[in-house]
Image 1 (cartoon, rainbow, N blue to C red):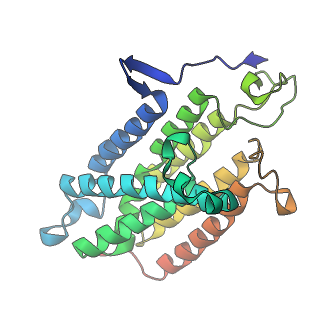
Image 2: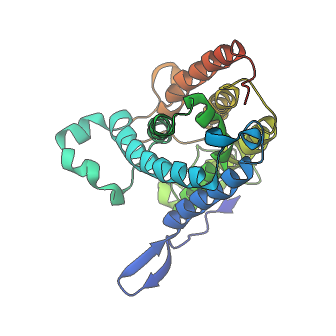
Image 3: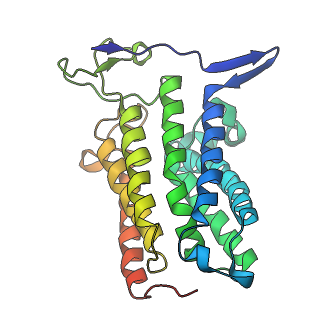
Length: 272
């Protein structure tokens, strides 16, 4: 049985300025996206596009900027709407207090989708082409965010068997019983495993929208599984059918991915 190693959430203190580990994980996520996006330019069909259809490093930079905006706005609004709608309806100004914490992946995903739609419209590109480009570059950023959750000692797992070798006590949870380090499970599943599978899948031409569909299905399934080891939010608990809010939000995500997979198969491989 392990004990959570208390980690100071402040990585560096420069006078009145505190640099938090969580902020650094976000920077790492954005840096990884930029690096992987640049590599993605070498994959088909993007490597073969010429003229006005050619993808450039500037496109990657612009998508990253819009994606950051989408993640922050969507993630915050999604948390307020999905997890604490009553509270924020009564305290609307606290919606802007992002320094107090509270971000939702599924809200951030909707924000990123909106930013990709904007980018596609402004560059006159098919939206699904943009989605296929972005999807394989996302999971490493998700892994970085979960590492930030672990460093902060938050979003710990459900109680585990005392015999589990990696069962971990999180004193901040109010209990000295071992729990699943679910943050690490999520790093490995919806972060690293999803990245490897999606990156290999996306290296070759696919019907337009197929890579984005694989991301929706893959993340939804892996997150759904990981939620069985993650402690539900105390103010929500388990909902209908014994499922957490995270699991319920994954259901429409997987269904949308299946629908997109079927739709993309009818389009055939996009020609450049």
